[in-house]
Image (cartoon, rainbow, N blue to C red; front, side, top):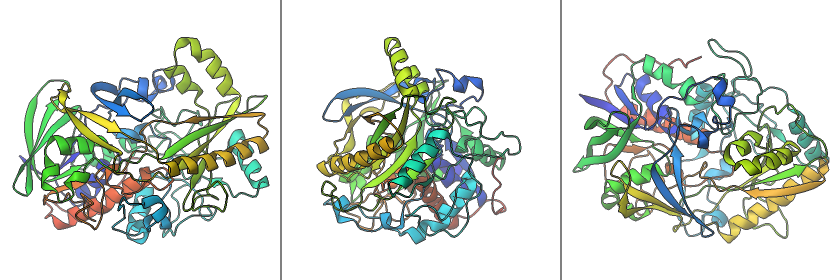
Length: 524
């Protein structure tokens, strides 16, 4: 059959785009490279962390070059994508994040083709769908909101309260982070147990509102077809239209081609340009030379404060408090001009250390982290042309795709902004009673964005304001690769809102095949 739409990827970008299509009666096929993540006590164990779980795959490895080292990595693939293992932080980009900031943009030509007000209705709906709990009016940089938060937050943990009190004594304005977590019991699902395994783990009780538990079952119940463990290996086109999606089933080895009137690509910031480049679609896009370029991922570093007594003996919760007093920049001799970034409280990852480190290091690391509390510094990094993903045509993975290469360097400005944020993080930790601090730079691509960016200029942006891939009439991109800038907050809610916006636009241009049912209920 020919589907109305094929959605490639089941994370925030895929699920939210599919929502608008299914809601308006379209026949949607969702393809996901991974399988379902089982929920239960095993999620709390040493093998429950994302990068040591069975959902971490090296069957399509990619090479990473950071300038300091070269390494080979794999990726986590599962129904729900990165949402299953994220920490639940759900912040909107600030209104100024959508405006031109020359200190960040430089010569990259990165520019949002829409304003915050254009995206605000989708932010409101994404918060409803994800059940985001929060408190309005306490964030000093909070943007305009048309609706209240959908739920109330739970009480602060002891380390979160200590950081809050210390920051206030220093004249700062800490506030609770909005979280896509159910702090009150919901039908057929439990409430948050405050177990401390949010960030990096699947939620054992399904209280974290990832799209695999919150949305995809409802979409399937309303008619969407989901095929898990299916790898998309090439997109086929005829003229200005995508005519087929070639795939391979990871379990059975079945190969074939699927057809749809519209294709929505939401495979992820690294995988989406990988598929576009492997399909040769960069050659038909007027901005084709930028496909895969301008990769951003935030300049992140965690400052740990070390205390004489365990600040969080019960190991409850992960991230609850943020500080945005430096977000839009500060007058400081060491600070670069323009936006800086944010600080977020983070419980030290004792479980992750036990999962990832060699056996000989687990004991000392666990002892150190049990006496520590953390603040994550998150600086917006500059979009740079040479930060990119590209193909190594000399080698292929098990599915026949050319190997992916990733190159990324932080700019001098990125590093300077991070240093200033770290200085303030150390001051807060010392005020909270820490006798020593230690800072660890984060090198993951969990916040990767921008490799197939949107923009008004067809010569510098592969996507138009509607998420359409230029040069093709029926191919749209809705994941993090579409975001032209990273701002300085967790990107998941903005990816979700932008995908919702694009999904609505696609659905409104297509003739539905069955009756439209407004406000598709979410899985509760």
